[in-house]
Length: 379
Image 1 (cartoon, helix red, strand yellow):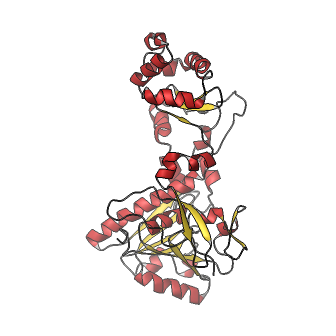
Image 2 (spheres, one colour; image 1 turned 180 degrees about the horizontal axis):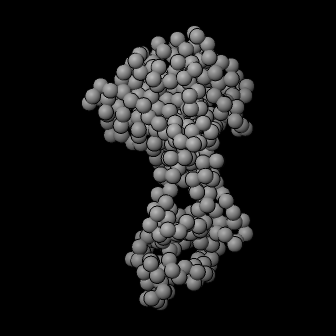
Image 3 (cartoon, helix red, strand yellow; image 1 turned 180 degrees about the vertical axis):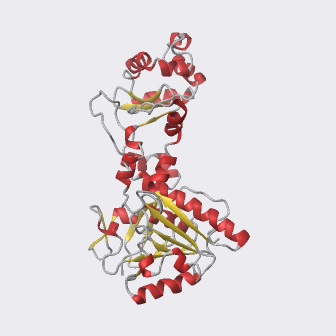
């Protein structure tokens, strides 16, 4: 069956990650996405390597970075600074449902491609602008990049090793999480705007900022500050509000133990033959364990380091204590559960070039995700 958005047309004027992540999601859901790219150069991320894909003819192809976020789109090279390019965009907009762009604030107005210029051509158009800081405010005209946003939002102040320990200091997340989640918020906002248009016939403008999205994503850390009045600090791999919920040493590596409640802690204590921990008022409740984590964690580590990771996983799973290995990415793709869920997919370009991609995690019962168009080559 056709995807749930198979009736939707998208003009994608975005580049790099946040915008393309959103439009890839729309493409995965069946939308017809046309990616507008600069002549000859294309999206910057085509060149952000190594690694690069090998084309069917043996030549060097696009960077893996580009391939992660541009499937289920067609590519059109267009010079939007030219009269002809602008005319082409306007013609496309007349038939489109959605336009996504991530130019600087006001960057498209001089070409007549801003929302106010296009909405009269198509009153039902949903126009989504993604910037670092939004369309308003003292930073509106500043460029914004994921790394900057992770720092400015406070995310790096709660990511990394605990202060005072080796390796401590500000640390970014290992993926461009601000970009990716802004792309996800964009997808949600666009779908909500489509629902509104279905009821009213009205399109609308969506203003999304990386900083806004990353602040929203502070979740419990942001709430802890607002409620408690103190800025949370880095905890390494430990959890601010739950104990034990962190990496533990094993005989041959490391193990994640994620005890989410007192019952699970009691099960862990029985497995360790340390019922005294479960009965100790310092450790009996999560609240007490959070207060006394500095006393408890060394006791746990002394126990966990005497068995292998796999021995612990087998025993803890039997005891219904949440746990898991610390995989690298190669190990993650080799995990039986990952293989079973088909989280690697292989796509083929018309020229025969094979491109591996990570699957979309949404599993519909009626309109399954289709992998129809491999990340397009710049023609």
